[in-house]
Image (cartoon, rainbow, N blue to C red; front, top):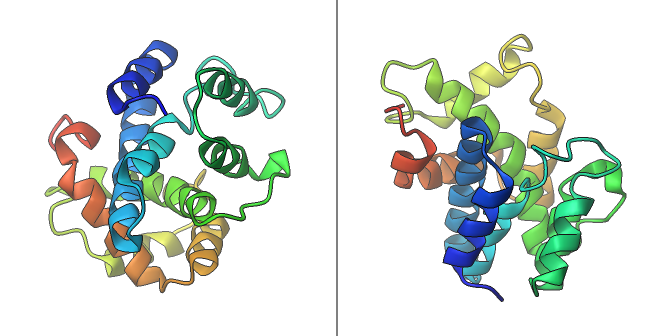
Length: 186
C-alpha cells in the first residue's frame, strides 16, 4: 500500500477545495479514532477516510463518484478492502458494506460533516462539544439540512454502537486533529 505521504499528495492533486479537504480530514480523524478503538490498522483507516471523496470535486455525479477515484486507487495498488469501502460509502453504487472498515466509513462520513456544522456555530468550536448538543441539532431539520439523519443513525446501528458513543468518538477524533479540520480556529 502507498504511504500516507503518497496518499496525501494524491488527495491534494485531486482535491483543491478547502471545504472538501477539511471534510476529508474530519472523516480521516474519525476513522483514526475508530481504528484505535477497534484495534485496526490506523494507517489504512486514515487513508480510507482521507481518500473517500478524492474524485468528488472533478467527478461529482453518481455515475462517476466514487468510481473514478476507486479506479485510480486500484491502479496505484491500494488494497481491495479500502476500495470496496469507498465504493460502499455511496449507497447508490449498490456495493454492500460488509467489512468493519466499510461500515465505519459510512458511519463516520455524514456524522463528521454534521459535527463540523455544529462546531462552526459554537463560539468555542469543537472544544467542549457534547453528544447531547449534536443530538439536539439532529432534531432541527433546517440545520445542515443536506446531511442525512438516517445515514447517521443507520451508520451507528450497523457498527453496533450507541449513537452518543458514536458521536463522542468522532468528536474526539476530530478534536485531536482540530488544527487540520478547523484551520480557522473552530
